[in-house]
Length: 473
Image (cartoon, rainbow, N blue to C red; front, side, top):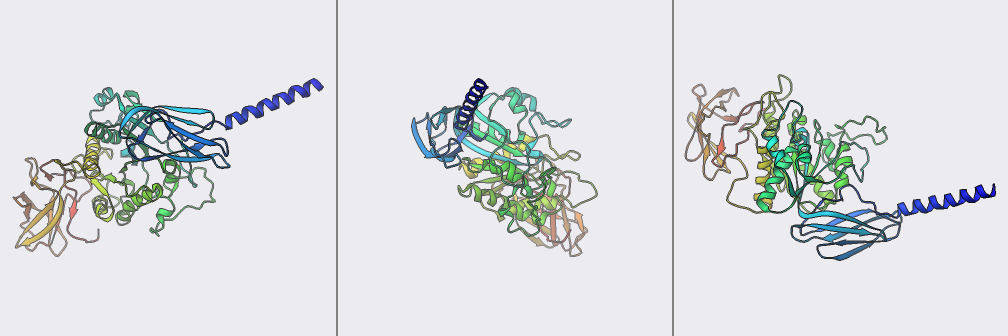
């Protein structure tokens, strides 16, 4: 018996020592790891857990200097490391006495990529729904300067501080599973800026915008019903306000980023008035929690699609997205009126979406010039007898239909009945008329669920669907 007690006591001491040694190890959230990209020329936050009250040091190989802080009584710690201009690969060593080294770390440009299924859609496509040109893109995707990480689908009534995932190198197997829109965006930034790019994809197909905004972010939206926090989390719907922010955005908050791209709106199609407010509200909400200023927020306007006989014409939602650009700060919209598919809500041409987001970033965030980043936007309408004349912003070199007849314009008189209009491009804009509308008062362009846009600036960027009236649907 005495021998048994001695053996048991020895075992308990060993287990306690082993447990303490485990608790002493540095523990990092999944957003930090091998292959990660840190935002260049900033004070990049790094945080985690370690031995309570221990001293934490972080040493980066780009300058071999240590930054230190002290863990609190529960072992939590956070510090900021100054990052150099873009480059790498580097190592980052974090220690509380027992070091953990992160390898193959790059310094460059980091972007959050979020939304619903059109952002989530992987380069390999969905079942029976391809991405145009994906096989070649995947086969030629090896690039040590682009890194990818995807946040898995999780919901939570309370803010979470971590997720399951890891940074991946850019190569065929990983690119095939990664967001096509985000990848095309990133590859253009990498090519033009010649810097490493880190892409963080956190998206969920079919979701509304409200789940991606936290509780504080909803304070100005009194029509949104916030969830009861005492409810059981089992089978928590991904459509519940705040639950995707809590689980899929909050673990990222504080990580150094340049900005965010967004592709969502189909699930909010029937509430355009509210969406026009929620869109800039989402951007402001994320900026408030990141606390790094009004970082750029660029989004894709939903593509035309035949939603069927029920529900609101999706042109109203596209209109809300167009108006939200002006309602928000440091925002931009990529229009894809020319790539919609009548019977597929997931357009195959994701390169257009990614490229047009990249044009916005390159021009508005990185200050590059010499190319267009936005399509024509109506500036002014004037009526001269039976003719209507339209002028446009974002068309310094004029307009084009690339040889096609302009078939998407309609005109109405005071009776609010719209008729197809004959439209043609002039030196100063568009002139249109209809023989059955003697006194025109309103014009609409491509204001339907499904339509292929035919109006562009000469740089090839399409005009959004628009209207000059404010008549109720």
